[in-house]
Length: 359
Image 1 (cartoon, helix red, strand yellow):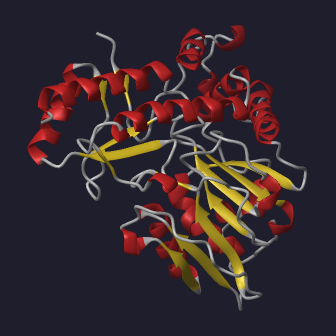
Image 2 (tube, one colour; image 1 turned 135 degrees about the horizontal axis):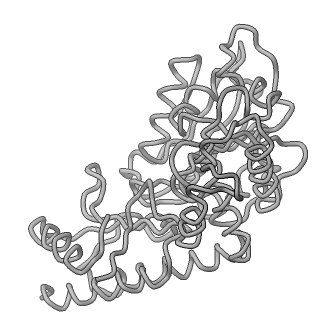
């Protein structure tokens, strides 16, 4: 039986990427070595390193005003690294709270310096994205948003709708899923393990005027140091960047980010249609206008029935659907590499399960 997965992350990698990596496992380009065994200072690895940067620039149309960094520590390190680099004396870091990850980012910033939550959707239990009615202030160090919220299943529909001179975004769970104007952002960060590749590497896109020397900052935590050293200040996560490069090649082969947006919308519609046509048997967690095309959250009214849903879905070869404990129910994460046929199979199972247990 074919097994399909909808886990929130680390998530599915494209089969083409896995097969390519398998074919190069013990002999990369007839060198007799796995790429992990090559020196990160050697030309063999550096070609991959620079190709990944070039591909990311091409796919996201990143202007020359911005630099691309490959760092480690996931988005969680960026929660601290961001204010350590951008929060200057007399300024305040501003945050938009739309879920657990934005809350964590805000709490980390508050440990570094003055920070304020200026917009929040907490009063709706993060079912609905809040109205963005914040006016920028001269005292703002930056305004931080989280583009997609994996736990609650909400996503900002238009990433070009925000206006702030120093707009920052955590795009860990939806980068490369739809086009947006990078020029509108001062800094973007994204852990790779959802749409870019495996865990271990974090992409940071930063406007170059923010790359300022800070002698009081440890070198390993300085964007300026990493940019100056082309993300080779310390040993990079070689294999993660190698796979990231293969995923970027795969995205280009799919037709680029614009084509992936079309595919992602279609995949999401298949599952949302199963929810919306169920006469209340399935209940979507996020309100329709805030729904994510990456993480689809829904519940059943009966906890015992939810246990049966998980059990029987796994018996049908469908895995990774259990929702986060703060929401309960189910979560289908349908990142770029999840094929449409997997979404169709889930929708068919949902219809079958409703027919079996619905009244």
